[in-house]
Length: 155
Image (cartoon, rainbow, N blue to C red; front, side, top):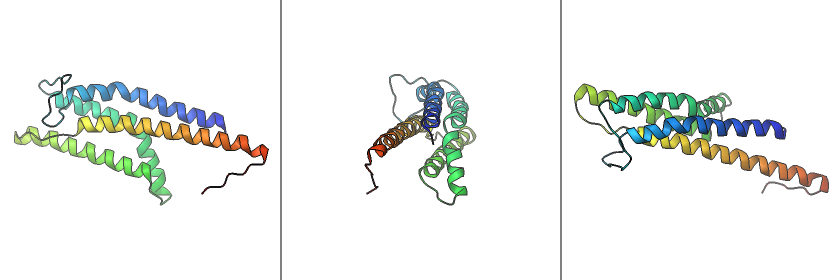
């Protein structure tokens, strides 16, 4: 791929991060984090429902990249990192939905994973952006060494 295409992909990943950031920060502030009470944590009646709605939006914004990548990997019959991250996101989201619904139906409090889910999305998108940036820079360095007759072979 050309440098322009890679630059477009890298910018799209970074834009994905910045679109996910406000949702994730709100989720982190209004969701429970186990039995810990953080100084900037605001809970109110039905805050877990609001956090779940925002998490669903975050799943479609930030998680879309990983689910598309996982689908591509499964089609090629070669699951890799994207499949693993997508499965982690799906299980975390599914358990949080179950925990919140169960707590309202049974009256027993359950620990949901919305705080962890939001932080996982941010870390994974940012990590993927860094990975693509490094891969692009390494490819550019290899291309600039090629006219000099220097051949770099993988170890």
